[in-house]
Image (cartoon, rainbow, N blue to C red; front, side, top):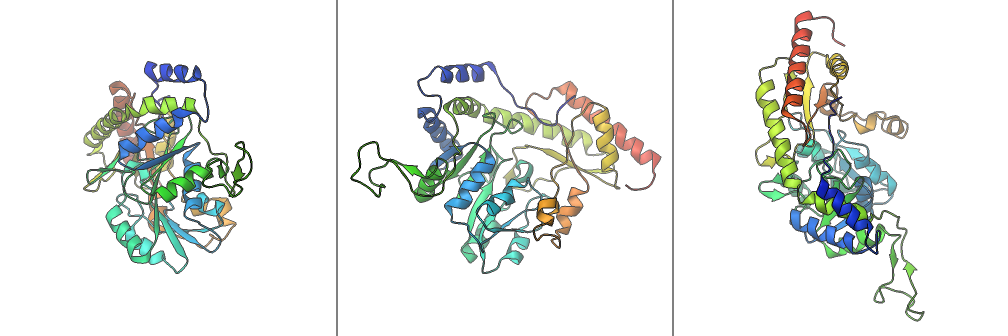
Length: 384
């Protein structure tokens, strides 16, 4: 089976992990700070905070800006549920704005339509690795006094008009799940240019616990004294995971370039296949190609999906609009409708793209798609 996505672990990654296991600290040690410093430097941000997952990163961001009951946060429906769940974790209300059918990203025009006096933040998601229209989103945020949390779980290594994603907004989160560009097995990162947000994020990932004499309320107890000054979580990451992350970060540009090569070949060899729509790339938005997502026309997505699987090719659908999940349907989103997102969802299919995808494997994927689509187009039949 050719998977739709896969990590790349090389010998130097293994060596880095082994070396970390031999250090005095395998958790809560100096390796975490080193990874944070290097990642912040890579994206051009002042600060970075490493956490246990991309979801933890989103939750921490919502905490840091004080999302609470009655607050609304606007995000896209075409994303993994964590982009909206993080708002619920803090007691707020996710509000879904429809997407641009070409880019699959949240449409700034639709964002502005959804703003109310309760709106506190926007969470744009760089879907498949293609940056959102951040200039337009920043103009809206400035106009209405909103926070911006960029969900760049798909976008490590992407850039927007020459600037790396991760340095543009109040906070940006990244995911290091194994199917992403680089991995720490599980893990996430938050980048920011605000020292105030940085301190809140660091506290939140470790119970909001402090030993800092300048922050302690009780300054008379002994040197052992620590305080829990908020309701934080255990979202810490280990030094071992960060050792893998530091090793992988050195290769991130190479990983992204290879994905671009894979995408370029798909673009060239599938451009004349009738019955599919290839990904659109907006000028200035330099995708890191976490996913290569096509649209299958004529209601044939299920058939193509099934035949690709039968041929030993891993394909997937990213994603069911968040408000369509049973939890959301049962909790106030029954009447929510984003027609562009639903139309795109009914057609999209992600096909294999990852660093180690060989030329021969990609040839097989391309030929299989061609054969299936030609067969589908030739045999006709009712739409499904």
